[in-house]
Every structure is written in C-alpha cells, then in structure tokens.
Image (tube, rainbow, N blue to C red; front, top):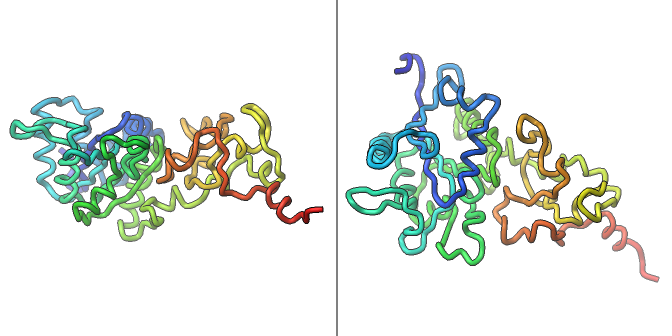
Length: 296
C-alpha cells in the first residue's frame, strides 16, 4: 500500500522480438538507481508501479498472464513495448503466452493493451522502427509499434525511445519530463523522439569534430582523427551520446575508438550501410575543397 497522498502510475512492460538488451540497459539506470525507481517515488508524490514486467517479475505461467489481463482492464497506465512486432501470419512468430487455451502473440497484446494506455513508449530501435528484427529479408514481417498503430487505427499517444540499446536516462528522463510538463508540452521530433535527448546530431557534439573540420581522418581503427572514413554515422544520427555517455559517464562508442553505427535512426541497420563503410551523402572538408578547386 502507498500513502494516500501518492499518485501511483501503473506501468505494463511488454516484450516482442528482442534480445532483452534494451530492457537490460534501462535496468542499469544509475541516477536514479533502478532500485529507487522500483521502490521509491520517481518524483515527490509520484510512484511508478511496474505491475507487469517479464524480465524482473517473479510470477510466470498462468499467474503472470492473469496479472497482465487484470492490469490491462484498467485505464491510465503507461505501456512500454520493447522489441519489434511480427505482423506476418497473424503474428505467430512471437508467442508470449496463452489466453483461454489459445496462443497469445505480442501483436495481440499490443493491439489489446495499447487502447487503454494513457501513453505508449516504444523502447529501443526494434520497437520504434523495426530495427534489426525488421532487417532484410524480414521473414516474420517485423514492424515498429507506430506502424502497427497505423494499421489498426490506434490513436493513443506514442513516444519513440530508439537506441540499440537506449540509454536508461532516455526512458526514465522522458517519463519524468512527461510528469513534470504534461504530455502535450513534451517536444517531439518528426519521428516522435523527445528532442531533450534526440535533438542534435552526434556530429555536433563529437569530440572528433575538430578533426573532421580539419579534414584529418583515421585510416584504421586506433588512429587519431575523425572516424568518418571508417564508417561513422554520427553526421546523420540524432542522440546525446557524446554528452551523456554510458555506464556512469565512463565512456561511449566513439570514445572507445569505434565509429557510431547510427542505431537511433529509422534507417538502422539496412540503410545506414555496413558498420565500417563510409556513408556517401555527407560532404567532408576534403570533398568541399576539391569541389571549389578548378580543374587544370
């Protein structure tokens, strides 16, 4: 039981075609720690109550499905969906349990439980845009949550929190922003991503930006210089990874010497190119200089 003065917001977490990496990442939240998110107020007088979470709940089998069914009949919960939604063959490629003796799929659950939610959050790039699960040849017809909403005319507010995996701050920071400002005052981009976390290109805040501007590019991993020639997708990728970093600001991908893979973008992975292949639609200082130099 919670104090009468506490506003309790139920949270239902569903998992589709995923590797559990997005959930694992967000459970590694540090500020606040996940134990505080689960047990304490997220904001003074506001508590998140995770009534169904397949990764951390102790219930299983019929007991778990009964809990989900009961929670889904209420209104006003936050629904977090992790993983892509296979839509081919009535969603049979991701069975999540049984209901009335019949197989229940993540497609069934998304359609059913989205309608009573006050907010749906697509957690991770697979949930937001299809991601790796929807990569070519996509035999299961995997789709992002937004595509499922369009097909089934579900008009519940949706926020995308892409990333492979997403930073825990992107999830809990977004929920906090919604609680503080109100859903209508949270600024989203055209892809329904919160601009607080996805408002700028990685390229704008990259510590290697000076190398790019000077035309100094690494030729192999481990070299000093911009990683653009080694496949860095920072010039086309929106997120605050350079500022936020990971694991208590220990490091991040480019800080480790690896190129950005563009994982927060809807084009990931098929249309951002191979990890170590240079993207060709960004003008570099070298190419600009060549374009301005008249041929002899």
